Image (cartoon, rainbow, N blue to C red; front, side):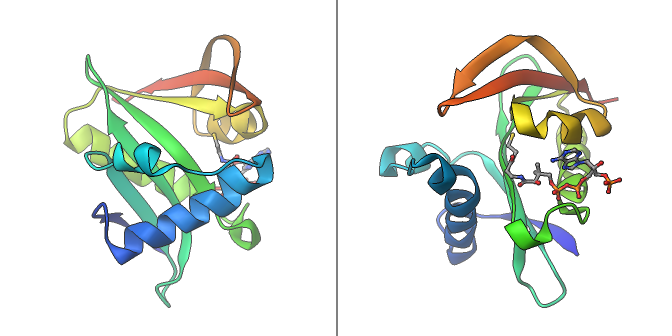
Length: 144
Ligand SMILES: CC(C)(COP(=O)(O)OP(=O)(O)OC[C@H]1O[C@@H](n2cnc3c(N)ncnc32)[C@H](O)[C@@H]1OP(=O)(O)O)[C@@H](O)C(=O)NCCC(=O)NCCS
């Protein structure tokens, strides 16, 4: 498997939105609005594919201020979870972010995903808060 940066608004981007909807929104009874998606035009969209070019997972990287970049919307196809897809996407995201000069990766992690990010050396920061109806923690990692 391998990752690729995908341009906003392309058919490959639409496939990623569908995967994110299936994995991150529908289980919560929520859906994306056109305004929410339109705000993603200047973010980076990373997709992971297998050798048959089937989409296995995706995430978004959103540049912030002060050298920080935020990882968002990390989603792996349900039948492909726990097979290293997420780990590959996070590792490649860190490489991209470092190459672009960012010094810290941040995220709002779902409580259920904390063990995954901890394994990749992300640290919890502060107290739990609610986002999209569920418990989250801010997590971060210095990019050295
Ligand atoms: C969380 C998620 C992104 C992880 O991606 P993944 O491809 O399943 O994870 P990986 O196979 O790369 O896991 C890497 C390591 O993290 C750990 N890990 C992954 N998911 C875990 C979980 N749910 N609980 C505990 N440990 C976990 C494992 O130790 C794994 O190492 P191993 O191979 O030695 O077991 C993915 O399962 C997913 O999309 N979940 C549903 C949506 C979600 O919660 N997204 C994150 C929103 S913040």
